Image (cartoon, rainbow, N blue to C red; front, side, top):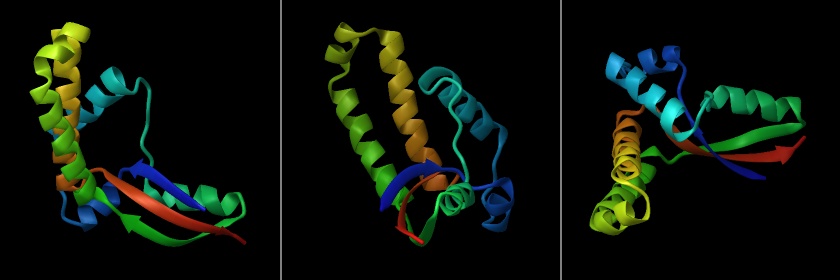
Length: 125
């Protein structure tokens, strides 16, 4: 079985990797939680592995895709910007601004390493 999930490293993992998690990152995480995915919460890759094990699966491969996904988000942001006028006509300036901020901010967070999208390959034990 294959599972793709957006994850966030634990604070300990961020420190170990030398990735600084600053107030701006906290504000962006709150923006996502409040404006994009209300009450959503990302988990650490270890949590997914633990849940898989609790349900009879072993994770035999994990593929981080964060830099690839950052590029995907960049492309989506460019395409949204190109369609700005039409997007605003269909929704509003506020909605356009929210999603443009989401796409560009997430791309930055993926590049920085504070979030990742990972592919988990699992098999039944």
